[in-house]
Image (tube, rainbow, N blue to C red; front, side, top):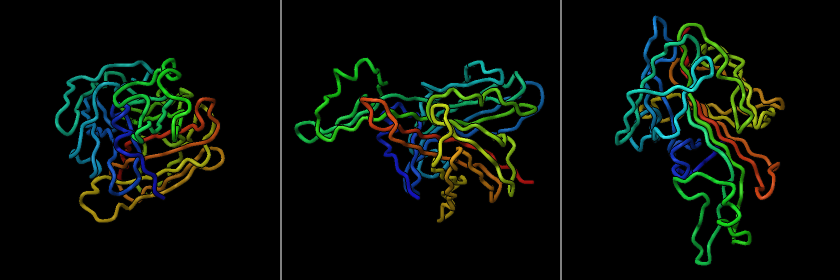
Length: 277
């Protein structure tokens, strides 16, 4: 299986999230220094970047704009000590409330592409701009050559837990492609099967294609990618072959879009830690 989302598309939505299951493509990721913590208000630090070698910052940083952090009560909180350098952004969280935190980016809405009279590819919204549905009709020519309009949603996440794992941050928003854990993402062990459910706009997402790759791809020739597909009820099971940090990438599309879109698409990425038994 090979799914590819060009890096330009990723950049055009403000460095949010892109999926590229190709071994030679760039991937977006957020990596926590650790995923399970204990003690009184522990700290965790994060790297966020787009790179070719997985979890090695060597291309461009993920920008801090748009980053959202949910505490275990579901409240949005701010990351601290944020810095964006040449290749990565870094930030910290002080886990003052026990439970599971969600850290990530999300975006969505209408997207369009077409060719102008000179044959040049045009996109709406423009790179770095957010889609405003009210501007669609006046900025996208209805009869343009090769016009494609999609209702597209993107999401990139990771999770950290202080003390006992909790589930509040996994309540579905019913927007785009979402992972609803049966197995908690901060309770993953090598050799054990983890079960997750995927929803698209709140409905079970059948046929979601997932690619799972362990980090440190720089140091091996084979990606050792695991490919799985969700069943008719949106469930998928993954058995972890070895301990380490993994990136899960998932992609979904259907033809149930409302006009002017002709297709709905959803992409999802998440970084999980798998622990030794």
